[in-house]
Image (cartoon, rainbow, N blue to C red; front, side, top):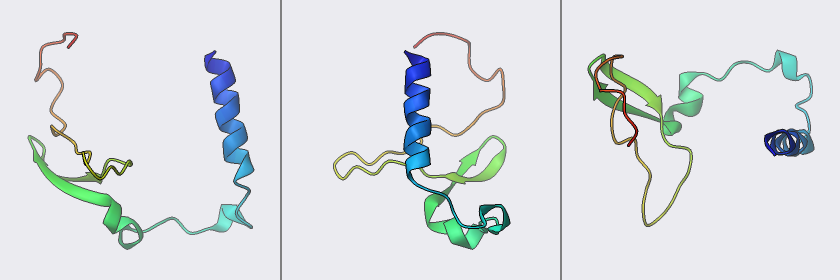
Length: 78
């Protein structure tokens, strides 16, 4: 089933077409994506990361916890 889904995703991506001369398109800069970033405090200091990609009006998504160093939490199933 997974292979079928990946193939379907590939088809969907192909259906969007190609960017003309796409290999030479400049990489996006911070100012191009600033409205999609957020800053949060973590044990590593202040981090800038992407916001959750979905948008919901009644229950806006958010990152509940920042990244933490490996070994901070006990390994367990929720």
